[in-house]
Image (cartoon, rainbow, N blue to C red; front, side, top):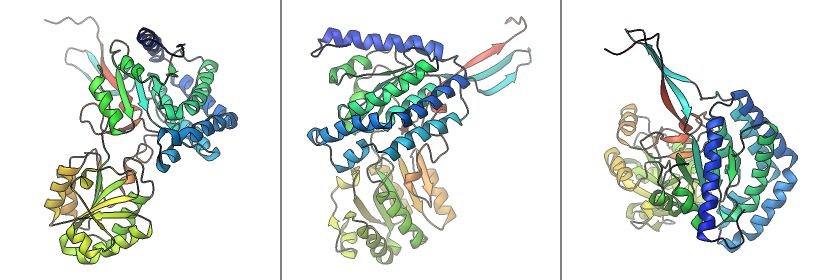
Length: 426
């Protein structure tokens, strides 16, 4: 344990201890049977329900202190737990039980002319350092996905959720002891010292990958300081483009859902693009539905002329992930202009087209370079649960290793396993 005012040397030693313990655990966890990992998930879910009152008491302390950390209403909502939200966390763990264990899966195989049998087999990444903000449910989700995929995990939540995270961690650790998981398979950084994050990001000999989940400043810091690979996305500037052939009733339902259903998340829409050929009819109709939901519109000059309630948009607006009931709007000349706008202002996260033209849909799919490209549906579907992955570790906009929602398989790598009968190379 750290002292109340730890020195730099103490923080470095604490980080190394966490890392070394996780490395040892990962070596054992890589060969733990799937049935044992599932037993831990089931026991964790049961204990979450049994300890709901204790977890809510801890969470109430965090919620009460939240305004002092400068959290807005949306952030406090992400932080807050209820009986129903704890039940959803427990169910998410039980859903992961039902997912296939990726460890040991043979991705592909062949028998060579010389008789060698070559298999490409999924293996855990090893040790995951997972750093996140505000949402205590992520503590359980991340631990569940890491352990199920055979990885040891070091969890570091934000100071604003410390009491909640500790309460959840105690449940997960107790279940781990009861089901004989390796000690150190799940660890929580219980210190809020900011410099401790830097110490952990230097531990490339112990930590195989870091996954940050939170605001842009957190992710930028992790990318700048990490000495190991990072799986991440910076922004969620997601677009919905309404093409000239779009069904406007469909388009209205999609943009309202994409913006309003949960505006604080990374796959919520932040910009509406409308084809100029239908703007005079479509924009007032779409805008009315959004305004009725309390959405503030910030638009180009044509948007403001067609929708008097809209405020003029700035260049910055089109690059902003609001995380709130604010939407930038722009009238574009055509599909080419829409794709160009997304390429210039987007974040390669999630972008959608509403169209009745198959050729337009195919071109949008081919030319928009995003982790998820969606045709005639809400951007809110870019989610591990909605894609059938179970609870996700996060969404990646990288192109190497993992892209899009990251579930169990994205937390594995592979190795080649070769069986011979005495062959030697000539």
